[in-house]
Image 1 (tube, one colour):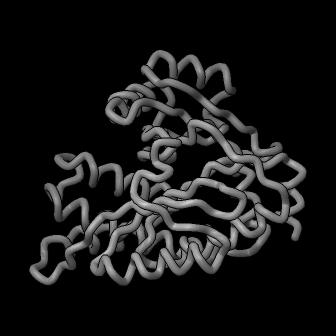
Image 2: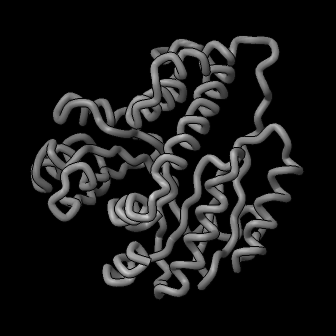
Amino acid sequence: MAGHSKWANIQHRKGRQDAIRSKMFSKLAKEITVAAKMGDPDPEKNPRLRLAVKEAKSVSVPKDVIERAIKKSQGGDAENYDEIRYEGYGPGGVAVIVEAMTDNRNRTASVVRSTFSKNGGNLGETGSVGFMFDRKGQITYDFKVGDADTVMMAAIEAGAEDVESDAGDGDEDEGGHWITCAADDMNDVATALEADLGESKSTKLVWKPQTTTPVDLETLTKLMKLVETLEDDDDVQSVTTNFEAPDDVMDAYGKS
């Protein structure tokens, strides 16, 4: 979603952190179980599982929850999940990609379609907005690892494509460096960066918009209701949009 730290600030101000954290733990545990079931239960031998575990640790998922999720994958009663991508448009013509992991395709499709419809959006066919995004690797570091120039040089040396740095209005916890690379190069770039900058905060695949859609306060308010409702569904793993809003609109929404 556009507006990395600004969106984090809005979430904090609107008091959804506890609910978001609980949902995040559950969804990360599901990803760990699926990754371990599809490959080796040893993170060192399973790149997808290694990334899932790293992502879980970055948001302080307890070690016993991670271990339980891996163990669950080896049991005969472990659920079989399908990975599905839904695409459509939200209020204001904003492109939306929803990634889900479900044991019931019909249930999830019905909920996602209904959520779009009730919140001013339209669910389209697969590929209806995907062409507007690029699949990229994203490696995140806390802002305190170095200034923008230092991180940019390290990223270039590692083979990354782009770096976005944000000081977080002086709050290091909400600032950061977001390093983008080709999806296929993510592991190599992450390894090279780790040797130079230390362990990253997060390493994952994302959908990066090729172009953005501007929104005003009214449209942003409606869009965020759609996004939050989708994210609250247990089957939805992530929601990506291509909206872009001026700082004053973001600030006004955060205070609403």
